[in-house]
Length: 91
Image 1 (tube, rainbow, N blue to C red):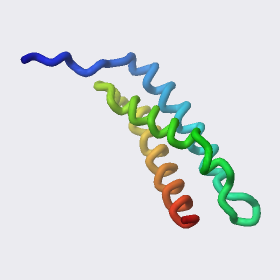
Image 2: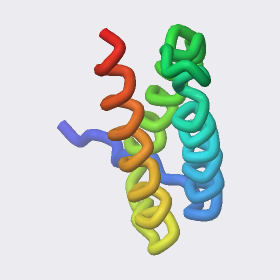
Image 3: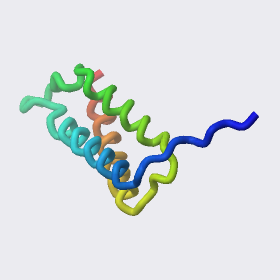
């Protein structure tokens, strides 16, 4: 029983897609709290789960580890960690 190989995308498309995801995550990270330290309304929106699902979708492709994608993934990992810490402190 042969299975089809996982899909692949052009590396330039993957890099642009990851850049866009990082831009949106960093925006959320910067605006996750209000000026008084309360959680922002952004945490309750559908954008966060959508961005995470898009990231999961992107990670399912093969041949994506160029130098640029590694750099962007390091930034994304840092943003996700910070978002997790902040959102966990509100619960």
